[in-house]
Image 1 (spheres, helix red, strand yellow):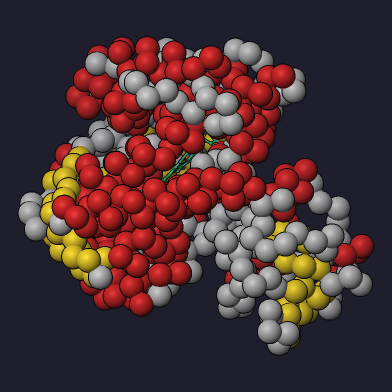
Image 2 (cartoon, each protein chain N blue to C red; image 1 turned 45 degrees about the horizontal axis):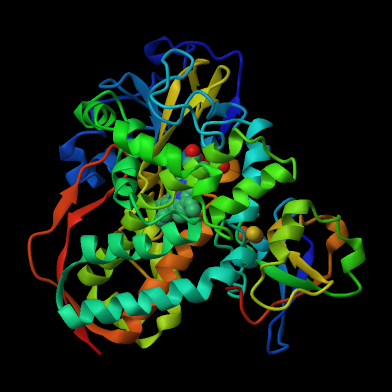
Length: 107
Length: 413
Ligand code: HEM
Ligand code: FES
């Protein structure tokens, strides 16, 4: 089970056990990470599952698609080069230790 | 749960040896009796099995969350291009030219969908947000001045009509065709009952209005409609396709939110504890709206057609069969939801199928949520009490669940 580290807006960090094959969004919502709202349920339509990926990890994720890129233009907090939608990050064993920062707001 | 399986044979009682027959349920989900109170029938449908047969309309149906979700997410096996109503476009002429998005499969759907999802994106919502919020506040101030109002006509209908047609860029005249047109569209997904037949018989003037308003020269610059037409210049869609995609917004963009807002107000008026929680924390407005969509499911049903022989929960269903999905029953399935019959404005609603799921999941969901959030936040800040003061009347439609009339009195905070 890969571990994912979520860093809350108040810098508190929380490690959760994710399941290979699920998305980082599903791992978060299934483990009570309330900052991930995921209004569209992971269908890449709402941009309320925004995360900032730790700079040591951003290059190790699969590249984003056009839809995700367009949606990120509408996230509630500032879009940064490290911005991703957590429903589009698929958990693999190689992502053990992935660090994701949670934004202040999703809407 | 649902896997395509070419070997499974048979319909109904001719299931493969050993497999139990598909339960037959004697329910008409398009009858006034059902509309008045669908919940006991929803439960019976869920409990009967993972897939059931409705003898009344000779159609299969799924009502449990897992199966509804699986059908929605397997568009290759369960297609939309043969119509998302009971009528099978492979056998019957559609009552209007089919939608280029709702009634399309990939790859055709992928292209038109990309256009509408950019026109209605989160970034666009940021631009229109202030207008929608201001209009909600103005509306509530006016209703407070009157005191006693009909929450359906004066609020659930009036508010979307005060923001959405402007956002699309429609002309002022003729807007009174919009709700009747949508009423026809959503009745037409149903079976050939009186609701559907009467609606289609009377649809001509509404269809003529809509067709005309979808033309480029009738759409104000900067609106959703003009943005769709601009994609013709970019080469993403043809000149003939653009008006059809504007039509999708006029078909699906108003009556749905009318019934969504109506659902939310009806919930808040019936459950004073939840209203009190919303008042003490108006930032819950958005989730209170979302939970009302789960709880009431203003869009109750859609159909798919099987493209091959499939196995649904151990039962074989043949190619070319219509499958009715009960979104409202899935949204209250106790297998998926704790305390499903409770309206809880802090519930984790993610995953409900009130806006569908998968590739056809509502492309206007952000507009709907913006209207819902703006309206419920304005109510929470300005209104102290919502009291139901007269008979609550239900409106009958083959697809949409909502009210005809909800007399309420609002008291200012
Ligand atoms: C509370 C309000 C709403 C509800 C409950 C709702 C519900 C739904 C549902 C259940 C679907 C899925 C259809 C399917 O799977 O076959 C859908 C699709 C669609 N909705 Fe909505 N809707 C709402 C508001 C809106 C708004 C405001 C718009 C336009 C601005 C809109 C435009 C559409 C369109 C064009 C589709 C077809 C998408 C596709 O096939 O890819 N809807 N809606
Ligand atoms: S959950 Fe909606 S975009 Fe990720």
